[in-house]
Image 1 (cartoon, rainbow, N blue to C red):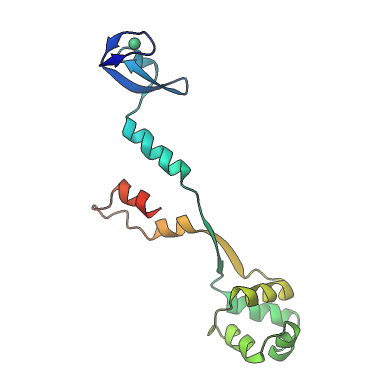
Image 2 (cartoon, rainbow, N blue to C red; image 1 turned 120 degrees about the vertical axis):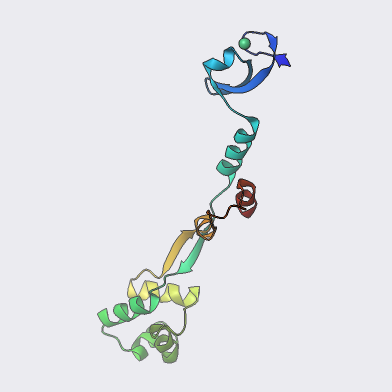
Length: 147
Ligand SMILES: [Zn+2]
């Protein structure tokens, strides 16, 4: 039992959104707004607050891009290595796809060759992708914990 915030009647009250505000209303007045359950409200608030995190990753086709970029500049491995103060073997390994460049090297290559080697991705999106939504044991609570 409670007091309806709209008509003042003492009755069973419900949480409702009336004109954008959360109020407690009786059954009759609840028809004026959208009655929401407290639980639903809590979940939607939690999701809105959950910030997306961004992470930098090296693109998958880095080897191809570096090779293309180098060839456009008409440089061989040795010349490119000298230009960015790296070892020739490092360039060869990276272009062969045997070695993923670290961020420092990727940035140098990206600037020098004028290519995009670093991708900015939403880490939350990535982690949601790995969740099996078909799994019947997974609840909304599990999703929230994961975030
Ligand atoms: Zn009322």
